[in-house]
Image (cartoon, rainbow, N blue to C red; front, top):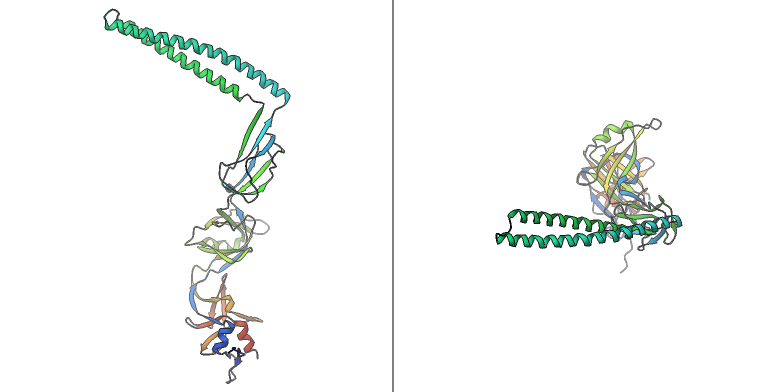
Length: 378
């Protein structure tokens, strides 16, 4: 019951362009056809580009002080951090001279705190006395034994006593806080200025940290730039182009679209032409939800200068190029395939324009070309 694949053969009518393959062999060889259609082909200028991180999405974490580093968590290269998240702390240890100066300040603040606390007790006593006097004046006034003026004077004295008490308490709190802050050891938190991925980690827990040294580098890759250099002669069609697409070497089978129907867009075209190369930069901003686009990746971008015109196009995989002559295999019905020479035009990422040689609706071979070519060459 085994199936023996028949070898593709040239038709008996001796037409060198006609190849016959049995239905069984077509299935076995994986020969697949596709209808010729008309579509918008993204074609035009293709240039090399590079993936860049947006300037505002790159941050360096540095310590403003020197001291001993202390890790907070296990943050390594590749770790995702949130804005404001503490990555580590730096413990600043002062010199002997600075410690002595701080100790003198602390003792002085302790003395001031005790003095102000005593003043606060006196102010509280005066406030309580003023409260008692006000209550007495009100009772005498109600009994018509004292004038209203005495009540008003008592109210004023109570108000002044309360203000004095509050001011004294505030001074006491300030000196107490100052005393607590006079500490020979100070800790400074290193926090992530933006959300993103740690791409560089120079922090070593327990080591001496120098002020101003970069300890962490964080990149936010949610949206990135695609930057290319284009010649000034191509500026006009690029400026009016509404679509583009690009690929990166790391993911050759994945195409990223720019323009209509996407959030990806042309960000800017440089204002200064390089005097030697006669080029200027062009930058696109694109979404990177999966974070597969990385800073510094090489890319190839095709800028659509065709103005969205619809053309007959076929997959590049369906085209045979033999020493400059290009042809396709057209399905002629049944077990027959016809080799047909075509003229090509603009080239896109995956498709190529057919200027002549094919009609809309005809079916061409897109898979299994090798087997058909083997038969036609016999």
